Image (cartoon, rainbow, N blue to C red; front, side, top):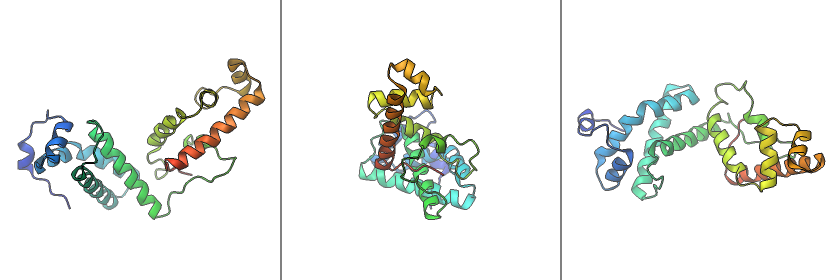
Length: 204
């Protein structure tokens, strides 16, 4: 278990940037990590607890998160350009997913032509368990959309984010409704491949 020394925390000013503390820790100053943990502990723990809804599990995930943080930093694999907290939150998010995977409480989507990622992430009635990292899923999916061919991306955004009908899409893009439908189909097929490639987990 990680130990937190109040006296060591007092040695650091709250204004010290995360990037400086990370750099100091990598250079061997163990106290720097304690400052980082204290600075972000409440927010990170609250995030984890809101997903797992169990204090013991939240404590375990919190500890595992910083164990992974320490190992990554000591291996010299940290390259988040100073964005320490988002990086740590991402690690925690992945560990929460691992927890649900192990307990069979989350599953990946079915690989069928009828699969629609937006019907999954757009469900406003998901229970607390399945709401975990929904916000992150939206961010991940939106980033993947940017990798689509321009014509497919255009149709998908119009349909899913602007709620336009295929008739409206047809009129706005200057193509037939069938062509718009075809582009949408290929867009969803390519999104499914990208999701598999990037190992993004969607809740059912």
